[in-house]
Image 1 (spheres, one colour):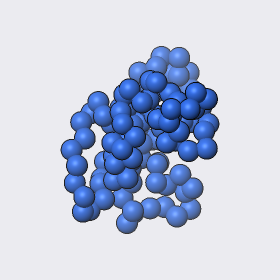
Image 2 (cartoon, one colour; image 1 turned 180 degrees about the horizontal axis):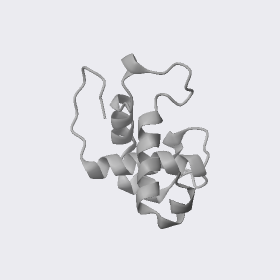
Image 3 (cartoon, helix red, strand yellow; image 1 turned 90 degrees about the vertical axis):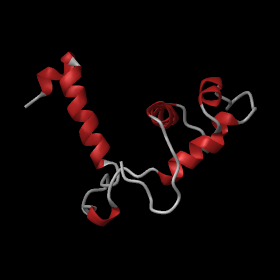
Length: 105
């Protein structure tokens, strides 16, 4: 995955998996701000998220992570910035989840 030029950080595979998991979880548990997972408020704190990664590290990784090359975007595709990972995930789901084999064309 390409990164923004400038700031360089090291991210290992486990950290990237955690970032993706937090993003997916935030789609299922809607909060006003993703940052609320780390707050101490009883109604928003998520122990799983806060123990997996600090909010500072999550935001640092998220701020430099890009899934598509901004110079090659399809302006007619509303999902163009995430299309590469969506396509890869769909391919892998079809490859490794037998229940989806019936939908393959």
